[in-house]
Amino acid sequence: MTIGDAAEASGLPVKTIRYYEEIGLIHPGRCANGYREFSSADIYKLTFVARSRSLGFTIEECRTLLSLYEDRSRASADVRNLASGHLDQIDLKIAELQAMRRTLADLVERCRGDDRPDCPIIDRLAEGGEEHTA
Amino acid sequence: MTIGDAAEASGLPVKTIRYYEEIGLIHPGRCANGYREFSSADIYKLTFVARSRSLGFTIEECRTLLSLYEDRSRASADVRNLASGHLDQIDLKIAELQAMRRTLADLVERCRGDDRPDCPIIDRLAEGGEEHTA
DNA sequence: CTTACGGGTTCCAGTAACCGGAGGGTCAAG
DNA sequence: CTTGACCCTCCGGTTACTGGAACCCGTAAG
Image (cartoon, rainbow over all chains, first blue to last red; front, side, top):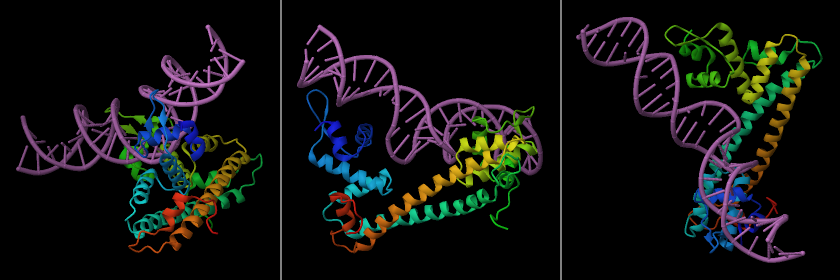
């Protein structure tokens, strides 16, 4: 398979696949003409990484997951630890975003949004104050 | 004020303040010895930007907010539009993360996490399947 | 006077995870 | 023989900083 086929099969952009090779996530072979040659195992790994990335794992976490995937003797606890650590990070991120959201939504709501210059959003950013509601 | 004082006053790291000058967010003066000299207006802007960043606005959005802040004749609607657009983005991000979280939490829960190799998380990443619950 | 120290300065490189484009080779079809 | 769709490598840019090297400044102590 050429890189274009691999892209189609894995759902990843061609550029991304080249990048993944560059950083050593995959090691496709080469044809006589210099084109990359993807085996079905390569496609498998690409798909695996694509799914992991879509769940928010970093590239380095994907690298670990791949090695866990390839290590048929590893304990499921290893995988679970990685995943639940990542889950905690997601929870943290969600909480941060929700805090932001609350403050911002409150400000937007209080802003008339008309053609007059008075604006609670700007006032808040300029004057400060830790509380988003009084 | 020196950059160290400005850092203390605004809560931003020294490095970040230099960076903000480099990209033209602020324009502090210079003393005879080459040190940056921060006016109270500079501190104000730094604090403004720090608060905007903490609400998740990008640097470019901060730049716009700053100009809106300095334009005393702008309509509050301009600010509100920017803020509510940003709010939408936050909502989107939260939704994405929650979807991730659901899938991942489900997998983690189903993984025994013991010393045996069988692991639904890896299986799912390897075998695929769009649904996170059957 | 020298030394040390805690500021400040510049510039360079690196981070995460790619994307876009230039410039050029390859292959199958018409 | 040319066209067009692929493929290749290499370079630069993205976001918002952060760390480090190498060097200046000002003051206080020995």
